[in-house]
Length: 164
Image (cartoon, rainbow, N blue to C red; front, side):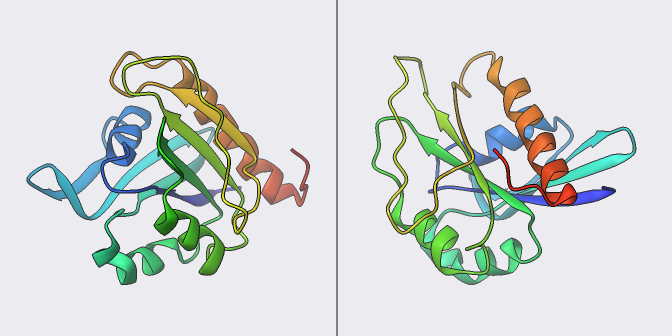
């Protein structure tokens, strides 16, 4: 593996930009008034390999941009706010677009704590490879777990393995 693209998807204000910024502190964000209007981009680099994290805007008005950004992705991270129903727009993006075959990991953003609440993907979307719980508003230890899962997933995809 030399490089892989992973898209970060979820509804507006789910925490996608914050997640990318915490994983890749030198990331960039195209935003106006604190809201992403085009994309986020950050890089993870390890042993000469890289993962390009591309944050996809969650607002429906950016549907065409989302489709373009998802093209060529190897996997996805679905950022989901705990305690909310899974976002129909994100489910549709993962189930009904060029992303349909993408393996994905769910990051449940607990936003201030509380006991983890199980994530259930809508029936139209394949089961996630992993679900990681964390709180992007605090010091986040589970981001190391998420990053390790991302590297592992990309390496498994490169080796042709579909194992969990």
